[in-house]
Amino acid sequence: MSQWLVWVLSVALFMLVLAMSFTLVRLYRGPSAQDRVLALDCMYLNGMLVMLVLGILYGSSMYFEAALLIALFGCVGSTAMAKFLLRGEVIE
Image 1 (cartoon, rainbow, N blue to C red):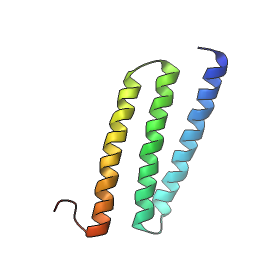
Image 2: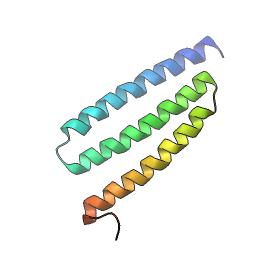
Image 3: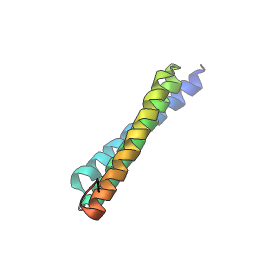
Image 4: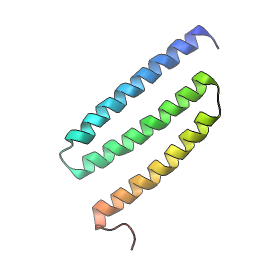
């Protein structure tokens, strides 16, 4: 792997961690429940992207499988929270 690619991936990793810290602030200070759900959605998306960047950086396929699991559970969790906020129940 070239030194340029390692540097670019390190910068991307730093920016994703910075984005996660900003969404953590939104999660803490969100004025409504909808803002907090969107912050959680953004957190799992950024977490998935961090795993993908680490997978490219280290050249391991385990990171890609972990990113797939994060995406799957994040999508199901966001759907359940949105349904709960709309109707007040998750399972009908």
